[in-house]
Image (cartoon, rainbow over all chains, first blue to last red; front, side, top):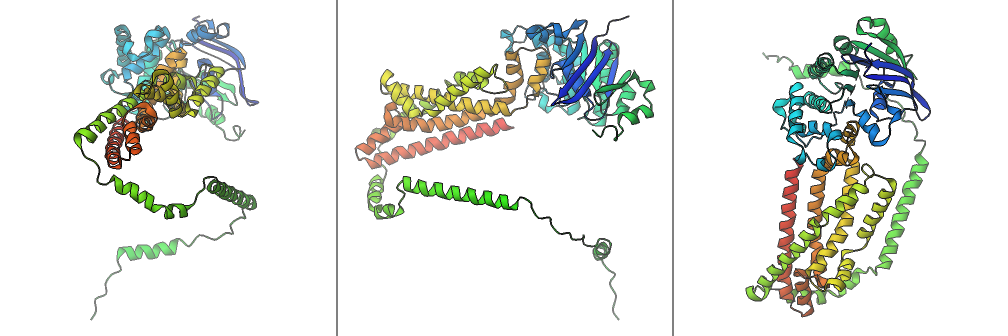
Amino acid sequence: MEQAALKVSSLAKSYNGRRVLDDVDFEVKRGELVAFLGANGSGKSTTLKCVAGLAEPDAGRIELEGAQLSEFSGRQLQLARSKAAMVFQKIHLVPRRTALDNVCAGALARVNSLASVSPLFFSRELREEAMGCLERVGMADRALDRVGRLSGGQQQRVAVARALCQRASVLLADEPVSALDPNAAEHVMELLAELAHNENLAVAAVLHQPDLALRHADRAIGLMHGRITFDGPVASLNQNVLDTLYSPERNAA
Amino acid sequence: MSIQTPPRPLDTALESASVRTPAPAKLPVPADPHRGRKAMLWGTATAVIVVLHLLAVAGTDFDPTLLVDGWQGMARFVSGAFPPNLDWEEVIKPGLDATLVTLWIGLLGTTLSIPSALLLAVLASRTTSPHPVAYQISRAILSFFRAVPDIVFALIFVTAVGLGPFAGVLALICHNTGVMGKLWAESMEETDQGPQDALATAGASRLQQITHGSLPLVIPQFVGLLLYRFDVNVRSSLVLGLVGAGGIGLLINQAIKSFQFDTMLTHIIIVLILIIVVDQASGFIRRKLAV
């Protein structure tokens, strides 16, 4: 059987003594889009943040492409982690720079540090690769526009292109469409599904709307109080499961 | 026979509205449980401020009657300045030349402090500093350069390089590093850390995160603060002229010492024009940048 691109086991995390992740196990394989569902505070964003290194887990194992992250430290850990790219709800591009420069910045891990202090020194090769990434998300014609001049949906596409330029095999998307209008949200979700299915990426997306998961994801993982309560194909994601995931009395904590 | 006018639509609308929405019911306002404490806080604050001002009045020999009694002295001084001496060869031309020197001192004092201010700002900003120790040390260095007035730096440098504009430039570099470094560090702490985090997850090094994630976000603020400091530094270099750092400040000082108040007035007018031009120019550039 094919090895999972992302394998998480026994992940645990507490904030100020409050358990936010409790014994979380899951896998994401190349070629599938997995939607993480759950009420606010269920731990779905924290899970992705632990994988990306934006939060420090208290316990558990994270494997990216077979590499066990806890075996690395410092610069080596950073490089091992760059196998996973993150796309954020708040996009986090630099608005004053062009889409092309922002996409090139995704490749910084493999560019010599001193020669990379300014976009002026990005090589022609890197720029051409970035153009290819922008083309892949349908934004090549806006490559030289400042990101601040693009719409929210266009900016999120550029952020996805930056992740592609990172040459990651795992794409972590933390509420990638929550700030977008329904139309733009639909397009970005289609793009993420295409990247999973056609480019063989492993995509893990935290979503707030179950209907987006039903339309675009292959599999869904449901979290409640930091525990996984559902893990299966979206086809089996019936109303009963959703009602339990989002039931107010169970999430009253 | 009178024709009855039908009620206008607005009247009917208002009438029916008043019928349908009665005034909301009234409820007693709950007593503020912190009322006594708030009143005491305000009272104490007022008392402290009043006492501080009384101490300040005593400490500065603040006495408006002295000003009223001594108005003739001031009048003599001012009337001696009118009309301003507009002699081109003797007054205006040397004044313009010296003004240019003042402008150059302000310019070099500002731009040559950019590298040191930038380095210290990056080290002294909580979001970009590599280590708490580096943070504390650079904060301390910035505080020192800010605490020592530029005029003291000028007096120190005069002993090394002699009287003249160069001492003024060196003095401004030192003081401006402290002020601009602090302002830049603060504006970096206030900006969105998101792009920096995003690059961190992409495996970018610390230096790359700063040059591609933090600095490009703060460039407009940096340039705005730089222009503001240029404005301030041009005015500081006037004062530095008084202690021998050259420029128009020196000429004003000489005119006063030799009782040529009409020459002094001409020079002050030139300075006024310089200040207005610099202020307008930096304001114009800042507005352009804000877009």
